[in-house]
Image 1 (cartoon, rainbow, N blue to C red):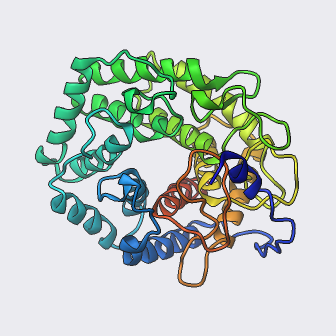
Image 2 (cartoon, rainbow, N blue to C red; image 1 turned 180 degrees about the vertical axis):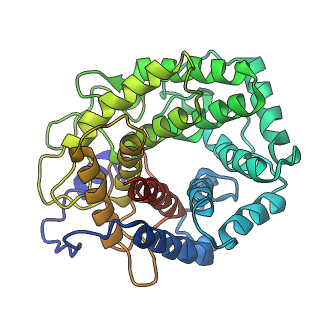
Amino acid sequence: MSATRRVIGCLAFSALSLSFPARAQTGAPAILEQMQRVADWELAHLDQADIPPSVDAKLPLGWIRSTFYAGLTTLADRSPDPKYADAIFAHGAREHWQLGPRPFHADDQLIAQTWIWAYGRKHDPDMIAAARRRFDAIAKANPSGTLLMSIPEKCFRWCWSDALFMAPSGWVALSALTHDPRYLAFADKEYRAATALLFDPDQSLFYRDSTFKGRNSSNGRKLFWSRGNGWVYAGLARILAALPSDSPSQPFYRDLFLRMSRKVALLQKPDGCWSPALLDPRKDTPPETSGTALFTFGLAWGVKNGLLPGASYRASAEHGWTCLTGALNKEGKLGWVQSQSDQPDSVRKWDTQPFGAGAFLLAGSALYDLARHR
């Protein structure tokens, strides 16, 4: 599909009739119930994801499934049912606690965040041994090549927005866990380099990669992808959660999180969703639940942790949850998940992916904590 068709395709939904509830239940028990429904459906259908054969992320340790398992850790921490933690441990044992095959690729580092969580439960060094070896080798190599995506196969760094969710918080968490400052130092260096290239200070949003700078969508506005910015925003929350409170790195990530928060809240649609193209001015754009879930997670996490004061941010997070729960069918399948892409693309009512379910679980976990705190 051409870039033009991708951008236009996500706009051609004026005849849609959306049936989201006026307001989702935001009590802790109701949120937990919805999280469990989504996790149960996804665990039963993981092998049925509609992944094109050419996409190497179909591998068990690729980003598509690893995002789901990252979300599943948050449910395992909150549900009294041990089956969610058991599913994570079974996955780790089956994959021998390894990382994906590409040494420098951020997508193949995402699963490290789940292995670090598992280590926190069982304290088995084997669970993080592969992650430590991989991160040690990367830090030693200290790649300093291009951040431009004009030659993707030569980009060994965090040179696209998705990477800022896939890798950095794992590095920060491992640094805090092992008290090894090298991991945090490397994450800081690479994150700041990516931000310098991809962050648009006028819009407080991230370009997906360098090829999108200077490009406009069909409505003449800059092209900022919902899920691409959702990855960054949710990743910032996870970095801040993993950083020690007295870390000198806190101000950089906190200030970036606050700048994005203000913009993200302004771009939410009346139905609680965010459109695939964030600056699309049309009111009838389709919902897109993966980006919406990542934004909802960040907003709810920020309110719960005192970074986003005021009732408006809480209302925005809860409104996002209304969008997400309205996209579930009766079995717990999450719809309106745009498939794998690098920009706004077409999305249909029952399009789903494991990474969408993982993002839903992240959003639910933050709202669950916020509800209990309230």
